[in-house]
Image (cartoon, rainbow, N blue to C red; front, top):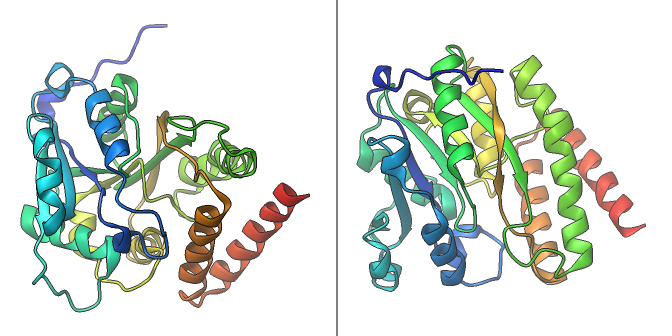
Length: 281
């Protein structure tokens, strides 16, 4: 079967990849420190963006006092430090960094932002699939793809890796169904390998103190009538390497989702808790 041809010339400004490689407080309840090894590994493994499209840009957003530790990556990425004096009305942690970047870049409807975390691994196919989604899906303003958790430390911890295997099953099942057919975030949304149009970011903003800013953002975008789509490709990340980090991560997610105060959020957490019970059993 012939590969679909993408008219890249119709896209004026494509992607600014936000690697949300921020300090530990920007990950809410996560206790692990800034993972310099992960961002080094991710940046150096990134394919040559110019060979894909000359307008692609890779941005790393971190705290102002952490920029000096990333100077060696300036040849691969544009490194930004969120000023310590930046004080949005509500946004905290990771949302604060995303809100600062949104304001600084003065995004428009011609901009597409691919959000990734510091450990997210992207290959040529993962990036080209994003370009094709923008080009071929004329209705979607937000899109999500599958995440595998085998980038680093694969099966280093059996329980946490198995738990994240369940999340991957969700991507291929519920998440693909909701974005491909319902076009709404019925079961939530990941904060990584997440493609958002600049117009949506400006309409919703990241002005929230919710610990699960991605879930909050998805609900607000849905209420405003924006359509969700699917990226037919895979990005790779890593699972927490110990049970304490795993517990802190899941607790933060559950707390953030429940503070949204909707029946859907309660149902989502109940379903998630049942899946966690399956992992324990």
